[in-house]
Image (tube, rainbow, N blue to C red):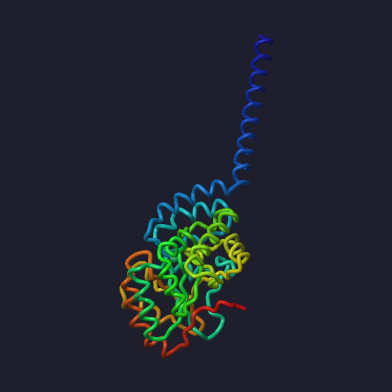
Length: 293
Ligand SMILES: [Zn+2]
């Protein structure tokens, strides 16, 4: 009887040890995963990019990334749900120092996601009509596909901004090496069209800034560029709404976010024709300088 009890007791002790060891191993596994977040996030990024599809736009994640691995991962999910305008209200702490204004009294128009043969030539013609210079935030693969349009943009005196290779809204959650490769590849595609053209601005797709993406873009000689006026033209609200929003919110130093690609942008083109007469009478418009101080 006593022997049996001792055996049971020993077995119980062994069982407890087993449970404790398993718990410790489990903790170590979880801890290990949290210490190497890049690989995990890389997978999430791949899915995000695919789901994003061709009709991307600058809708920030529901909760702009905080840089914390788990927060970044959860933010990558709803990024494609279609939220915009939240970037403007996200607050400075979510922008990691990205510029939201021109730093002068001049107003800057920016055109994202192109070039696109359907809309970029129309935008260029309209800007030319009003003798307005602007800044084009081009996507690397689109620059590669349409080098003639990159040349036309530069020939008209506009300036360029790197907008990543494939408009990856989650790019900021990748490793620094992956971010660097993406941005360099984009600059190389632009310079394949226009050798030695200055590219001193970087705009993160979706405005989903993270510390790494800001840091890498600065290392590559580019200044992070956000915006201050966002008519959500990528949601195709119609030319009237786009024009009204821009004219209502425009103020000295504003950086206006518009899109010349990534979907049906005829509304943006039409809005531009309505915006420019008033905008040019109220403000001095500029292409963002290629020698920012
Ligand atoms: Zn964009």
